[in-house]
Length: 388
Image 1: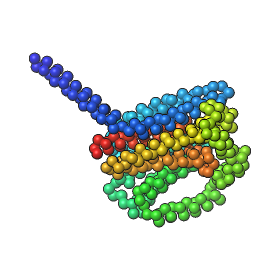
Image 2: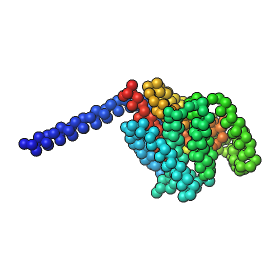
Image 3: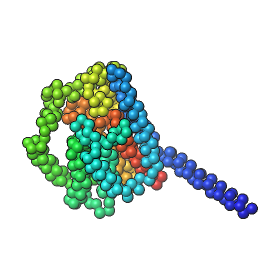
Image 4: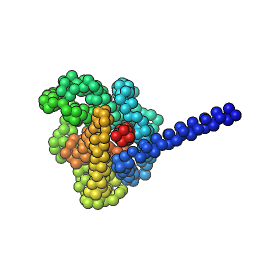
């Protein structure tokens, strides 16, 4: 009899635990921001369609990158939901460990990394290349969100500007050694936007810009290589050396202009299909979209990004802790910076520095890292609604 009572108690306990877990799952799914998630998935699908379209232009149909991107999407979405169910505030406690891990990842790639297009910035894992700098962006947002939300932080104190800037400079310096100037610039720009949002005095920005001007002038004469100077000349004048450094920009501008209102159709873009447009799946995928889907496709891309930014900002008023606020601000700042730079590269008013279009361009590291940011943002949104 006692045994039966014990078994019955165990069964009831298990049933109670299952009910609690099921109820918690329902609450999380109910408070999950499906609009924000859908806007991201639509951007991902846009990119997947264009990656397939670019593959059609190969002499022999090669869908390897298309298939890899599908795997990256499933992996990234799985991580997104895992992070959404995880209590994001625990990440604050682990941020220093993520930072240390990020340091060793960047240092290690300089020793055993694979060199692609002159940059030693990838780990080769089986048939996949892992680019640690993409995950460093996640780590840096985590680091800055924790630092700016600490009790000892005061925006008016110079030491906090130096400490936060030093944390960014360490990562940016390792990235420059690869050399990956584009990613290093994004890291610096992310820090600059974050300190502006936090509320540092304007005089600090004047000092920073003057310092950058001095560094740039010195680097032009003593550091920059000829190809780097040519990139800057191309930025100032896209028609400069159109068969070399200016070729990518010229072809991208032609592709964007050729799309018209509704585009030439998926798989019918002459610039991408005839291989006039280099890096069509990564740096210049926006130009492919503009040519094949026209102004309509461009508007849809911008609409989905707009919905993403709006939904992220909409939730800020509900968040009752600085760490969550700064993490969301850092995340949308990074996505906006990369979006703006990539579109600027494609339209010819910003230099080509190898920045992909978030959620859209081919690349597992960048896609998974961006979806990780969305996962933590969803975790913040869910818990802000539950505790509101």
